[in-house]
Image (cartoon, rainbow, N blue to C red; front, side, top):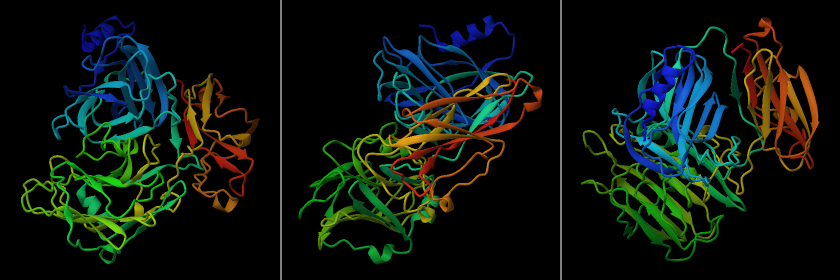
Amino acid sequence: MRHPALILAAIVLTHAVVVAQTTVPLPPHASTYTGYTRGLQFTAQTGCHITALALPPEARQAGDTASYLVRVNGAVALRSVGNQGSILTSIPIAPGDVVDVLGNWSPAAASSFTARNSYGTNTPGAGAAPYTVAIAGMPHVLYRCGWQWDIGDPAWTPNGATGSYMPPASGQLGRVLVTTSPTPAGTLANNAVLGQGCAAAYNSFYAALPTATAASAALQGGTLVLAPHAAGYQGAWLPGTANAFFAPPVAPTVLACGDDGVVALTIGSGELPTPQGPQSQLLVSGNGIVAWGGAAIDHPGTTSYAPSPAAMLDSALGGVYAWHDYNASEPGSGAIVAHEAYGVLYVTWNGVESYAVPETSNPSTLQFQFELATGVIRIVFVHVDGNATSSFGSSYLVGVTAPGPSANAGSLAFAAATPAQLRTQDPEVLPLALSGRTRPITGAAWDLRLANVPANATVGLDVFGLNDPALPDLYFFGAPGCGLRASPDVLVAWPVTGATRTFSLSIPNSPAVVNLHVYATSLVFQQPATNALGAITSNGVRGRVGDL
């Protein structure tokens, strides 16, 4: 089999336009991951064109084809599936653009969890993200990113109905070979996503804290309370309450989780009510996860000691997370223990150590509290050590998730989160989502797509404007949580006929409109109404008009 680097070299030599093309250097293959699509992300420090994409051969199996997805500023710039190998592209990138390049080998019968990826090393400073490379002669920092689905699945859509975007993070890069060339003369048209649609309801929420130092500042002394309701949990963050809530362990049972281990804990005096039904047994991970269900705790796309929002959101099990790389097996560490008292099950990290370089005493104490009569859960952060020197990473991920794939609402700062952001609901309701299908190029149509239109929607309204009002919340207009990201200069009404809508705006063929910013958003009116305005709004899309 020919190596993709050789294929790319042939492409360069035979390309009709003689330009300087270079392939972005990536770390060598370290492992193969099968499941969701993976790739890399960078913020462009200079303009360029992406002229070719290829996949390394290590993860390919017989009958596989290559699938590619490129997003620029959150908008899909290219999706190409069913390829035998490398492809030629012409994707303009402007300085400041945020670029996601995803790719994987897909089997003939692709579905949600069939993507085959070549992973780079996971060694910090030696190939793991953040990883610095040269693109178009300028240093760029690559991060790991992905999509929680196989993008080669014919049913895949970019609106969250088939998986969700995995935001940039440190760790193993999904290896996609990217070839670039300098930007030709002219002005690049591009799209950017502004804000998000409203009326969403998610079955998970979380706070991702990149280091132990950040986690100590955000969590220490606080308590996350999760009160069950019919379809999920209502969360509340109570700062300064940890010492009052903490119950010192009394005649506890030691849970021999060791380093990265999991122990099954049978509840001795009843069952824990959860939105997924009563639980008589919990699974306790030594790395700060308590889950329920009949299978093992899984961490799709990562390892048990490397917290990842995507892994939590797509775990097969529901559970509560204070995920961090603890090490109860370190000499001098306190133990992970469990005890029951007065109808409450307590699981306590009682002065449990974390890794450090050099090793030193850096224990943390936290406690999960499960009220067996009510199902209320509390995560009590008595002491969160701030030592961030571990060579394995020191990040934290704190939150709650329902079983199975979840959409990603993004990381929260608990202290600033609203009650709506701290509420879970299963099944989920995805936000009204607007995306640019093409870029606004002079003399062409700017195509847009609206997705996740609710079933009770009756009439829609597309809004085009030359300004962004930047209104994040239309509370005083009767639509709390809904924003407006386009001035109402042109309004187009339409009858709702399905869950998606495609529409376009013609861009004049005139140099006078080059560099003009055009804004778009959409509203849909519902019956019965879900708010006083009677309508919900999508995110906005900003199009910069160009001639390329």
